[in-house]
Length: 315
Image (cartoon, rainbow, N blue to C red; front, side, top):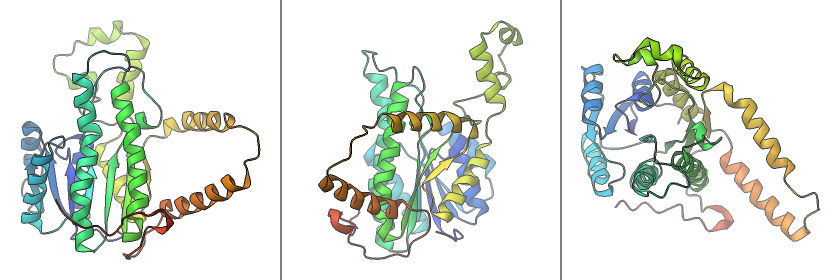
């Protein structure tokens, strides 16, 4: 989608942080934007910040509740008629560690961070298919979906899964002229990462006595990415139909090191011809479907892997 003017976007978690940054960037492009969020306080603040803009429609949406999300989708369709761009952005922090015996916090984090992406896609991508004008889906993962964060197993697990889901979705819908991108933000100025001075109750004396790791975290928060800059990066990726959206360069060396470690772990033997031939064919197909660049809308049959690309039924 190289021209976004007049197109309709549905942004979950859109009333705060990265979501609001994406909303603002879309509005700069002349889009109509549905701001879907469950937090009433965030919606009230966003409504005030965007007051006077008739290209915005606010809707309460719980991405973990399928009936509620379906109602939100239908409300947006009644307001704007179509949806072209879906941003599965809603997310929560926490959820517990891998060895924590409690399931409650884990299930909630997974239901929103992963389940919300799945729910949004399965409810809105059929709408995009149905109008046949092409479109784009952006799934918000995290750098925690590329390099794990200690003590945040539920969060990292969901964000790694979002990456795999988005890759699979991109291959599925590419022949239909629908692009898919995955956003991997690092330190960004949001409610999940705030500088100590943002808290009116913060005692500066605490910083002097804090440990080195805590001080470094606060310094990172002070230098974090502006959410609207992240939103503009999303716009550029949509226009280029580029899958990966990275915002924080400080992770590059670590990612390179992890990739080298994976490469070094492969066996050195030569694979049998049957395996090599099949995997070469598969890799060529994946490379084509994941390639940067826009495609025209077509009635593609999904290649030789039996992908059902033509289903447009809307639940």
